[in-house]
Image 1 (cartoon, rainbow, N blue to C red):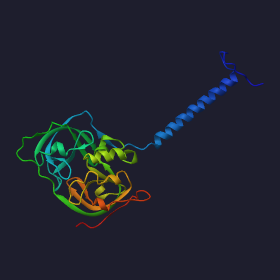
Image 2 (cartoon, rainbow, N blue to C red; image 1 turned 60 degrees about the vertical axis):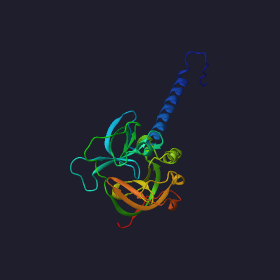
Image 3 (cartoon, rainbow, N blue to C red; image 1 turned 90 degrees about the vertical axis):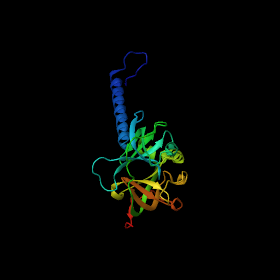
Image 4 (cartoon, rainbow, N blue to C red; image 1 turned 90 degrees about the horizontal axis):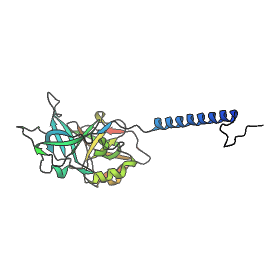
Length: 266
């Protein structure tokens, strides 16, 4: 006759107790195995950072085009065309830095802000009211723009602020609505290439046919979508710019292939 357990008895029969212990151990092991599989399968977070609440002081020359940027002169001997470190400037929230810095184009300033960075790009969220003219005899000159050539590249359009560190991950369909609002607010658009990119870099700051900022809603249809872009690759200091015509953008059916082609430099 098999053991029978009555709830008000203090202990279960030995055979039933052993069976229950085995079941509990097996379920606990299964739960840990499932948790381990989920952790391993989880998408890796990119190495990016937003120094929220940590204010730093920056000094450099403001360049408003194509997007507000702080040019900080590099000390010592540097390669020709890379005299400055270039930090994109944005306002708090989902706003670009154009309004904050409108009166400081080509001027040497000192400002406070929070650093946003990942490999290949750096940005500063400027504290409103912290921008003042700096005392210096000669502000750094802006690096020349070099025309590298025409490229055809596949990947995804993201907003620079979230992608560089404010959100993680700051790309993909889950981030599409946020990116659309950021770009509408003036945050610089960045194109993230899949596969091999020129000079080992996969980030391209998107600019219009005239080399200036894109229209704020000109890319709305293509944000966080598989897309192929053909444009003129420009290099300004350590920043890669991709000059494109928004009307010629096309979705990439069936996903994003890992390709990039490049013509001869002009």
